[in-house]
Length: 451
Image (cartoon, rainbow, N blue to C red; front, side):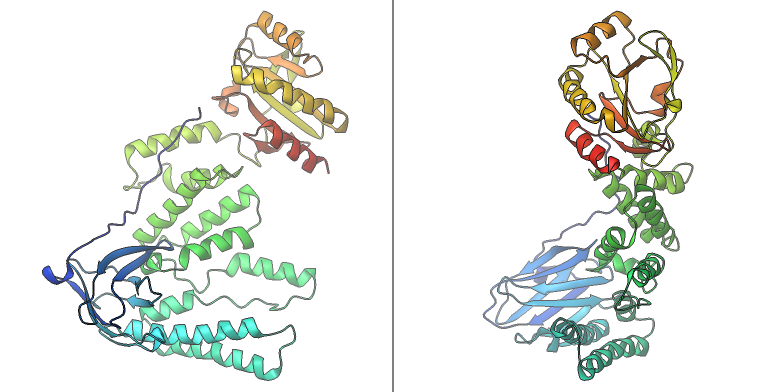
């Protein structure tokens, strides 16, 4: 059973359920709503997820939400199970709000006490018109259609420009996509120019040092789209991109904390091969040797221990050559074996799981040994007689069977052999291209790399 590491819990969302009318409130929101609504909810966004904060049963078409503490600036909402949804953009000091709901078009509702929300509704109305128009455009839109779309986009730009320094301006600008050099790329060169530009400039409109964006509906989605669409899907490229994004948040302690924890936690939880490159790079750049007060001593110790097992054997790293001894007593260095693909297979002949999986691995080897694949099997249990018996039992004579009888190679420092079998695939350039894989995955990867 593989070891677990607890995630760095950095952000806790407390849900308050209170009788709004019976508390001394620092925040109050009154809403005049249709009497057909029997229950109304008040909620907020956090890291792209929506959470209910409070709920009330309206009386005579009036709902009152109240909180004992002032709300953090961010994006909020009122909704009912009958389909009513009203989005709010609340900034500091906007803590006494009144809304008259227009049920047929919530964006036409009336509000006092939150100028950002009033502007936000204007922004949402324009954005919706622009989005609807984009969806209706054909492949060859006429001048009137493109002109109308441009007019709507200019209206958004004007709205932002007329209200500098507001929460609405920050939110709307961050939600505005960058303009690519080639809006409709016609060839591969233009496509890759867009790709390169997006990789560098994707966050140009987003103030990653503004903590309010962590309470918006779009920030996490933007980050995920960027990492999956604009960044090359290579572990080291993803790790570098994550580190660059974290660096952009260092002007604000909360933003730095949230961004670093988001990437560390998601990459620790990820099942994708190579995801460890992300958290390992972040550990190297921002945690190891740094004062990070919100990481506990226990968490730091767990991360350090986990890091030690992978610091020398991540995807993309040069594989450490091991000076071993073959079953015949001949010296061999795994770094000097020249082949298209080398499968480094650590096992323990006493391991029940190894005994179950090695026959499958051997069958795979027989299928690919004539296609540039070599198998180096390293028994980490240095009992030569039992090792020979094991090899004979499973007919593994066509493998390069090795051991390290005096533990001179220190293989455990360079490869994670805490759990066996531990499998690494190394390419002709001595780079680790796969690890922590089962027999079925080995087959797929060998097919991929051989092609």
